[in-house]
Amino acid sequence: MPKIGMEPIRRGALVQATIHEIGRAGSLDVTVTQIAKRAGMSSALAHHYFGGKDQIFLAAMRHILSLYGAQVRAALLGAVAPRDRVEAIIRANFEAGNFRPEIVSAWLNFYVMSQSNDGARRLLRVYQRRLHSNLVYDLRPLVGDAAHEVADTLAAMIDGLYIRRALRDAPPNAGRACDRVLACLDALLEAHQ
Amino acid sequence: MPKIGMEPIRRGALVQATIHEIGRAGSLDVTVTQIAKRAGMSSALAHHYFGGKDQIFLAAMRHILSLYGAQVRAALLGAVAPRDRVEAIIRANFEAGNFRPEIVSAWLNFYVMSQSNDGARRLLRVYQRRLHSNLVYDLRPLVGDAAHEVADTLAAMIDGLYIRRALRDAPPNAGRACDRVLACLDALLEAHQ
DNA sequence: TTTTTGATTGACTCGTCAATCAACAAAAAG
DNA sequence: CTTTTTGTTGATTGACGAGTCAATCAAAAA
Image 1 (tube, chains in turn cyan, purple, yellow, brown):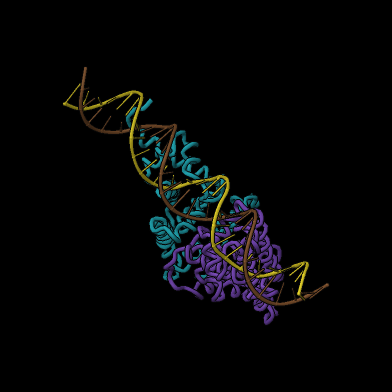
Image 2 (cartoon, each protein chain N blue to C red):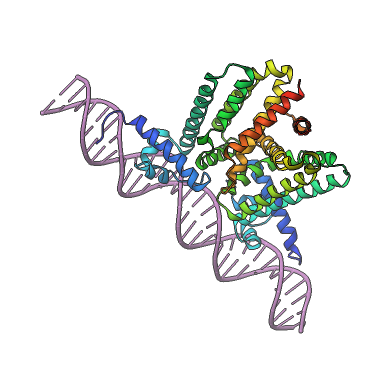
């Protein structure tokens, strides 16, 4: 069975399995053996490819973030006017997949991890900066110097709505939440002329 | 030394030590022995009084929540008009102590814990419900049936701003964040007549 | 004074888990 | 047909940590 070119396949399988297991457990209390088993290999192989448990988690999070980034970029392709672009960014954040339980679990644990792990902290900062600057870029034509302020407000709302999914049996306000942010956006735009 | 009536003192010391250690570690990867040591006793005694690690964490979180509740109640004493009362609730959430690193750490870990621990889930739901109903009570005279919607928006912003403190070296926008929520509140009130 | 009772701990058990390693299998290279 | 490279695992190690228990200590009650 051992063919060549297994590495990317194994890495991908481990990343998928990690996300799945984190979702199942709701925490990072997941053993490398569990992850490896779900990915169809031994724990030794997981260590071989990733080096350690933290690396596996970071790889999973990097994967989630890259999907997220692609969604935002895709959403921005069809939008031209600043107002539409801001809406597109917000909508991208609320796309179906992003609120799956495993993804929410991963995010919550990622926040915790970023408090003690340098790699996670850097990664989180990248995400926050990118969201912020994306928003500011299109908000500036709309509200001028208040762009930073409005961007922070919107970003906080987006993150906050994630937290409210921490309760497993949260009400099914999937797109409802998105509309709420958009309503807030309109109110803020109005307030700044 | 063994006198009578030690229990409440020991429990209090353990709760304090737990909050402190969670802040130090940034995660729940804290041993009962560490906590007990900081509280000036053996780990066996911690188990004796609380029964298990989870119970200790929950007690710490209940303590944090009770302090928070008291702050909100105190803030509401001086406010009469609905608009002022809503502002009081928001300001209470941003009071100095609530954003200390240990408290933020405790909250982040609490969210994670609530995904797998029933006690934590119940406790979190209590907090969310109370904040929501407090806000709705005073928002209804201001915006009518939109009160629920506005309350959710404000609650999400408050929670979201907590998350942004996950990065240890977050910018020192202590009261700045509060003003941002208030600005959003005004914009939303305006939007709903 | 004796007994009871709460406070307290050191030592121990039992389980878990990350990480390592030696060894084996198959394909590619020479 | 050897040698090297890549893939793969079972077995093991070493450390750590939650929870238990029997035993000790001192005050208070009888």
